Length: 151
Image 1 (cartoon, rainbow, N blue to C red):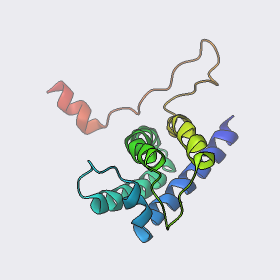
Image 2: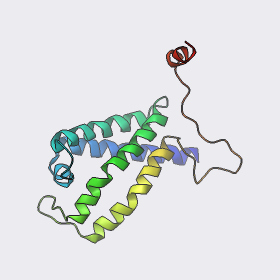
Image 3: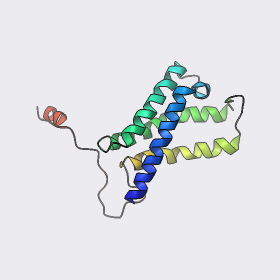
């Protein structure tokens, strides 16, 4: 399982890295699918691209992995409205309107992407946890935060 998790973690990190670079280099499609209630869509797309790149790197750093899993899962949850907007309003990307053959699997995959980030980050072992095994925990607090707690 460890080798599979490492391989799928690397794959997820590469996917987020690629998506982050795409957000920065070709933001037009992402801006187009951003729901109208999101302020400053271009700035949000740029920020999300940077978040994807940072998360992809952090996912590969053992000390940051747990938090990267949590943050990438939250990120995937937060961008879900853009995916819904893209599907419901048939927003064209580069003049192409994608049909249900794209949108239905893409929308159905979002919970899997959220789970994948949590699993790759070691936040959860579900559904692979053996009965009676300990649940994954967040990383231990740093010495600085432990000092503040005792003061």
